[in-house]
Image 1 (cartoon, rainbow, N blue to C red):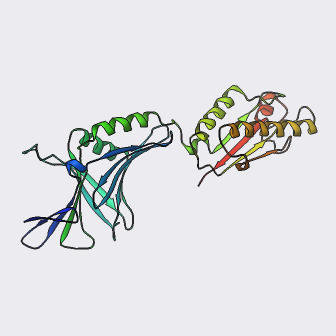
Image 2: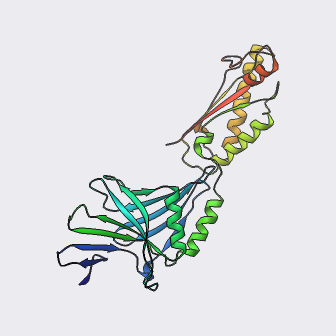
Amino acid sequence: MISLAFGAVVVCTPASAAMRQYAAEADSSHWVVDQKNRLSCELNHEVPYYGDAIFTSTASKNKALTFNLDMVVQPEGYSFAGVESVPPAWRAGKAARTLGQMKLLKQFDGELGNDYAWELLTELEKGYYPTFYYQDWHNKVDRISVALSSVNFKQAYWAFLQCRDNLLPFSFEDIAFTVMNYKKNSSELTKSSQKRLDMIGEYLKNDPLIEQIMISAYSDSHGGRETNLVLSKKRAEAIKTYMASLGVAEDKILTDGFGEKRHVDTNANEIGRRKNRRVVIQIARP
């Protein structure tokens, strides 16, 4: 007997066990791309009366992909869900293919890493239904089946790939702590440091969650102690002005100039002095 209960298909067996199946019907299968900035892209699929399937890619060199099965009712214990690629009904005779397993951790959503996430996407692209099977933790005679529908998938998938391609090729961890250097007797950064500052600026334009930025500038020992103190403060303020122009609130940007204090190398040669002419930028977010 097949009956409907709370939007899930319940398949009963003579032993009173059941497979409670959750999946979007053809007319309710929706895939939505969510992109608010160049730091993250999400491809979301609602599984009615169960939760959401979410593919996420974040800004980084590799733009790695993760998959989350966001469950309204999270696991009560520790187990595994089997993962299969199930052919649609119109491909009668095709066998399901085993993809692997997903850990189920107590009070956590299901998660798969980059390799598995890409495999799920490619199966969806072929028109198959990646499906998760596990023992229900509230009813020991029941099993759960959660399927991702490939209906209406391809157009959203293409939009997601374009979104991912536009992500920044670096992450917050890449710019959270930075040391840059200056040209001699100048507030102008060296060429490589200017490129680094431009990279930080690009990140700041896309992250509204920045809590605080600390800018600490230093000088070498040439030019006079008082002059160097003023120069270091000027260097720090110049970077603050730049960051504020990108939309960072000025009260979140703290600056200080230490002049000739806290040298990191010798001042006896140009190589050491170049290292001492520096600014240290530390960025915090939640």
